[in-house]
Image (tube, rainbow, N blue to C red; front, side, top):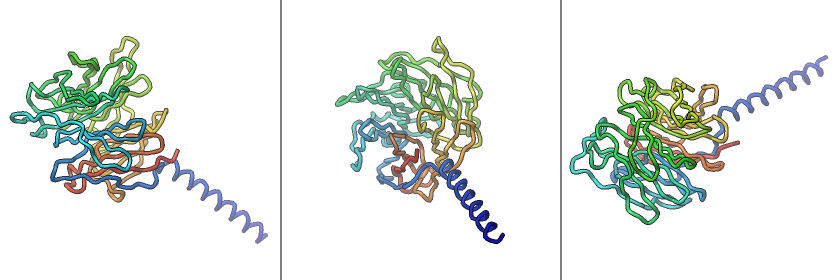
Amino acid sequence: MHVRTTITTLAATAALLTAAASATAATEPLSEPRVAAHFGLAASQQPENITVDRTGSAYLTFSFARQIVRIAPGGRPHVLATLPAPAKASTPNLGKAFVGGIARAGDGTLYVTYATGTADLTGVWAVRPGGRPHRIAALPADGLPNGLALDQHTHRLYVTDSVHGVIYRLPARGGKATVWARGEALQPSTFAGANGLKLHHGAVWATNLDRGTVLRIPVTARGTAGDIQVRATGMPSIDDFAFTGHGDTLLAARDDNEVDLVRPDGTHTAVLTAADGLETPTSVAVHGSTVYVPSAAYLTNEDPNLLLAHLDR
C-alpha cells in the first residue's frame, strides 16, 4: 500500500511538472534575450521602428536623429539616409522632428513616416537603394504620422496618425493619401491614439497607445475598411507589434518596459521586461526564430538598444 501510494504520488507529481512545463512554454515563448547593440543617447540614436530583410539585417528609424540605419547581423549601425531638418519643428505632442514607422519593399526601397509640424516635410518618404530620401506623399502638418505598413500585393501603404486617430492609405509609387479608416477606437484619449500597424490575413491591425488596445480592421472585397474589431485590451502604452507566425498570436512592445505575448483570444502575458534590458521598447520584428526589439529609452533616458531573443516555436 505504501509503495503503491508512493508510485501514485510520483506519477501525479510528474504530471503536474509536465503541465507546468507546458504552461511555461505556452506563456513564455522567448528565451536567451540579449542586448545585441547599444546606441548613443547623446546622438539621439533612439530606435523607433524596425523591419528585417531575408538576411536578418535590421533597418531602423532613429526618430529624433531623423535617420534610417541598417544593422547587419553582428554589425554596427550604418546610416543609409538622414531626412532634412525643418526650419522650425512644431510637431504635435513632440515639438521636434520625428521619423516613425518603416517598411521595406522587395526591391529594397525603404518607406518611412516623417512628422515635423510643417507642411513642406510632413508625410511619407521613400529611399531607393543608393538613392536620396524624397517625399512621396504629403500628410497633414498638424498630425503625427506614425506606424507604417506596405501591402506588397496591391502596392499600397497604410499609415496611422496618432493625433488625428485615423489610418491613411496611399499608392506606394506616391500620390495623394486618403483616410482609409476612422472611428473612436482609433482616437486618442489623452496623448496618442492609433500607433503600431501591420497587415495580416486580409486585415489591417493597429494599436491604440492611450486605450491599450489591439485592433483588427478587415479589408473588404472593394478594398474599403470593415468594422473595427477590438481584439485585446488592458495593455497601457502599447506601441508597435509583430506576429509570431501564420496565426494571430503577436508580440507587442509597451512603453512601460514590457513586451507582451498576445494570444488570439485576447489574453496576454509579459515575456520580456526591464530585467532583460528593455528601455522603453517601441516595436518588434520577427525573422525566423529571432525576435528583434528596439528600445528608444524615451522614458528611461538610459541605454537605447536593440535586444534579440529566440522564439521557441
